[in-house]
Length: 306
Image 1 (cartoon, rainbow, N blue to C red):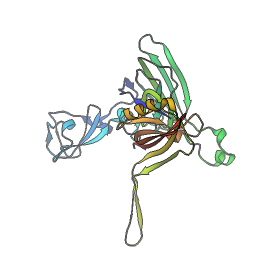
Image 2: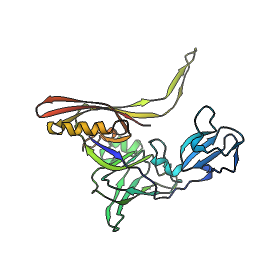
Image 3: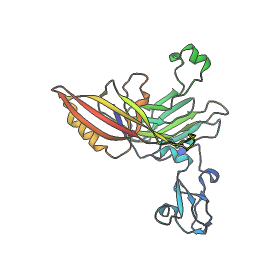
Image 4: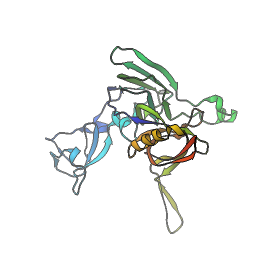
């Protein structure tokens, strides 16, 4: 298992721009807004909760007993940089999504909740212009792993997670990512981008458990009719890790240092089929067991973010 503490990212450039129709008009202190008006400020969208809403800064008036604004969330280009996996930055149908972010003191990158046929990664050193990474990654499932029935009769699905933890360490660089759409009606999008340095914890043992926490609701009336209210869900996992005895203190310090913060947990080893153990969330609980003179075991409980 590896963990990646995300660097704080900003957009150097993006092929998708903020628009009045999707993100709201730029907020102005001299404009009076009606209930339901949508505005944007500092890459965040807000909706007015009152009529005659004038000179009330949304960033400081969206909470409390009498809020003037409801905070909606990040604007379209910045949704991939918030702390949510399900909010996506999306290019217009048929167009590629292209963006650049800083890549400083990092050796790992991850894309979560991706849609597209492929993703191209290019890292350029900010000092001398050297290209340290230039590769294309297919987002289509490996058809060789499918049965003939699956190949001919079921849709070929796409992977929704990409992680690369083997990038040469870059002190100060620019990461350019191109997510390619599959056709005129296809959409290229990404839910969250992570860049940072990996820290190796231990080898994940067999018996790892992974599932979801579903926040949907079901209501059954007096006649037995059930209706479902579909809501978000988050991943969760329970892992047991093999730790050599000499790494016990180091691992304890690493895990203690990431408490109460969102991180990327890469729970799978190198074997194919363990991508579902990659979770963006937090370590809810962990316990180290001194199982013998040459081996320790760490039991980790992980809760993902929606």
